[in-house]
Length: 343
Image (tube, rainbow, N blue to C red; front, top):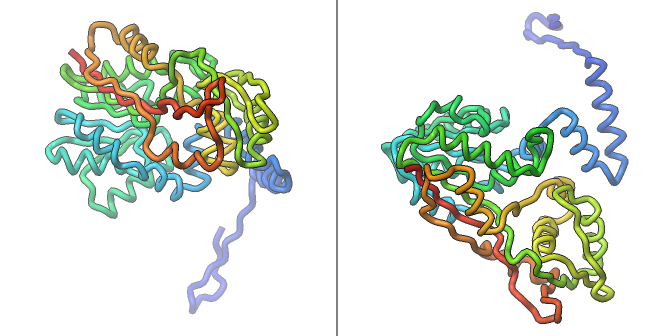
């Protein structure tokens, strides 16, 4: 309630009080901040209120997050090159780089960004106003795209580094890390797609054969301790390993790669990265899954997998990766690029 304090200067005082729930949340954050487990406590709090991980990241440090989402433009240009039609939809548009690219390279198309996080949608609306951008943005659920853009309402639907987050954070049928959430999403996208329309996917990939083993030898004296903590905290699946020397571990190749994603990001991202699984299919399994989920209604036009540029050089100062005989080997492919066309 406002009350005038000085009529000539038109000043006012404002008083307010926190709800009991608000006071408890403040108390929780104050106490958690005293603990080395602060970041994990905050993640638990957001899980309690059913915030998605990417929503947490954006709330926690929105500008940095949106900047990171905009950092890799080369593959986004490739996505734009394969986009077709009059209506293009970007799922989880982050800071809007993909929206800008699609608008620039397809000036006659209607470009729409859909995100489940309210604050990201609001930030994109501010960007749209600042830049006088022609694209649109809306809040929506990727599991039910046809409800937002209509049956056969789009010509291109883009999933750029978003499917693995949905796989990791959405409890589908009561279970996280459930491939059925990917099936639901692709099935919904197919309903929303016009004939000859395209689903474009850029995301994580596992390597094959699955039974391959790798040795990670740590150059950082704290690396082994970091790994052991990761093996206990990772939510995606059980990580099993054995010692391969004082500073090395032997483990499955995909478990090794999954760990290295988190090790690359470091301590700051650790509480969040241990909750998500970047690779969720091998190439052959992903192909089979698409055919099984979408049937003969689609053709796979492009299916590529590769190691993201610069990743090997970035991790090299921290570890050496070898086969079981101790012979150095390259890192396995980490990403895939898939273009699916509706018949």
